[in-house]
Structure formats: structure tokens, C-alpha cells
Length: 393
Image 1 (cartoon, rainbow, N blue to C red):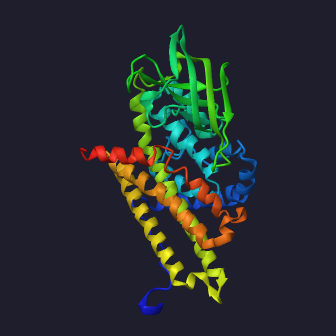
Image 2 (image 1 turned 180 degrees about the horizontal axis):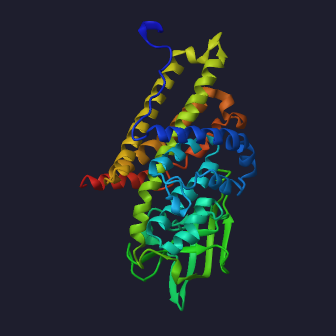
Image 3 (image 1 turned 180 degrees about the vertical axis):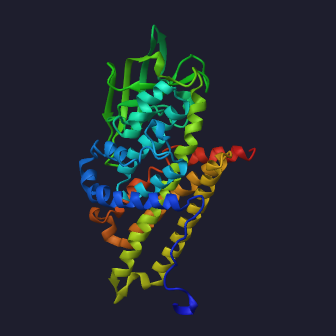
């Protein structure tokens, strides 16, 4: 025990519901993989602004892309809780770009095909996605339409045997390397949310082009501007019903936002732990800087923020897993954790001082990477609007 009867350090964390022993075994396996094959290469991939496509079949080989998919399609027969563990553990790789690229493939782009697709689409797209032999991207955002999906302009015209799609998509994770894009387009001239449909667009079609965008963070991932100039998509690549795309978008948003919350809590914990070690070793005025009250109190506040975010996110995850309408709780978790992640990373940079501003420590990267959270997957402002309306306001 320390001064005033307080423990010197916290006791080991227990398994927290909804996770169980099986999920913790998966966590151990993922941690070994991340520590051995991802984290040692993170700096190089950041400098190259690209991580190798070979990571996708490697993840497939290890079963990490099929955690929630049934064995009949090449998966592991698990559930969304197994994918939640994946979201948490990928955050430890040291590059949010790597985590984003792998996560977008398995948790954002593939789920609509699995949930709404035909058996034929499962075989042609989900099975190779689980194996990592095909790379997937989700294409919703456009230059003039982000969270406002009613303003989509990319459109499809029906022709003999399929559809011709023209338009643009932007800020698409995996958009350069993707083999197929699950894409939302307008299929009628109707305004508003009606007339939106989803198509699976193979990227090797004439008229399809993608260019890599440079960005503030997530350097190892490819974020693309996609142009479609009369790209043909066969009838069998319509995903779900015609003009039912808005339903698919809304169904996908909840899991995407929950995965973002899980990843942000894990990222906060990672940068906190690194900074705690630094504060115990860095000497100033003859003692570790962590011994100064001002620094101790910063850690106390950050630890409270992280635990609050974890509790809210796990609460939303439990509701989602049990099949309840968790829209409000997921939205709260997304809103709470994204801004907090940026602020915790910034506070950790402050504690590192000048060292935190240097590339070699990885703290400045954590700050840059975290800044996308309050924007991607629905901005803070959109999250607040959803919550406000859910209260009848």
C-alpha cells in the first residue's frame, strides 16, 4: 500500500462482459500477431504511406477475417463479439492507417454483402474476403455528400443485363487497392432518401479509376477519390432490393460506429500506457515527472475518461449483441470516444514535452490519427443531432 492507504498500482483487470474466456483467448492470439507482424513494421509503412496487400491473405490465413462468419463460407463460426476484440487489438499495431485498412475490409465493407447478399454474392465476394484474396471497400461518401446521404449524385442507369454507373466517391478507405466496392448510388430521379440502391462494383471494369489522397493522419492506409465513367455492373451485383439502399446504409452505420468507439478506447489506453511508462522514467528536478502532482492529476483524469468511454462502449456493445435497438447508445459511444481519444493523445503529447513532438516516439502520430475520429463515420455534429432528435427535440 502507498501513502494514505492507497494501492501503489491498480489490480489486474478482470474479464468484462459481454466478453468471456473464449474472447480472451482470441485476444491473446491477436496480441501475439500484432506484436510480431504489425507493430514492428508500422514505422516503415507510415513512411511509405502504404502497407502491403499481402497482409490481407495473411489475416485470412489466420482466420481473423472470418471471426463472425459461419464455417460454411470459410469463417470461424463466431459472432460480433469476436470482431469487437479484433477492433480493440488492431489499435495496438501503432498505425491507425493499418488498423483502418484491415478493419474497413472486415467490419465495414464486407458486412452488407453478408447480411443482404445472395448465396451467389456470398460465394463470389464474401468467401474471398474472408480468405483475404479479395479486398473490399465501402463507397458512400461523395465530394458533396458525406453524412447527408440524401444528396448522393452518383447514379445508375438500367441497361440490358445490368446498370451503367457514373459519378464520384471520395475519402474511400481501401479505394485504391480494392478489388470491389460496395457502393451506394441513385437509381431514380427521386430526391431525399428514396431511390438509393447498393451495387457491388468490381474495380477492374473499364471506366473505373481511383487516385490516392494525401491526408493529415492514417498515412499507411490508402484513401481514394474514385471516378466512375459509365462503369457497367451486371444485374446479379445489385445488393438487396432496388431503391432499398438507405436501409442498408443505416444498418451498416451502427456497427461501423461501434467499431470506431471500440478502436478509440483501445487507442486511448495504448497512448496512456506508453505515456505512463515515460512519466515514470523521465527525470526532471531530480525525480520522475510522474511524481509531480500536476502530472499525476493529468493521469487520473485521463484514466477516468478512458474508463468512462469503455463502460459506455461496452454497454452499447452488450445491447447491440443482444439484439436491442442500440442506436442511442452506439451514437453516444461514438460521440464520446472520438473527441476524447484526440484530447487524451494531445495530453499525452504535452506530458512528453518536446519528445512528444518528435516522430520517433509515435505520440504525434497518435494525435494526428485520432483527429479523424470526430469526422469519420458521422461527424460529432451529426451524432449530436441524432441524439437530440431521439429525445423528441
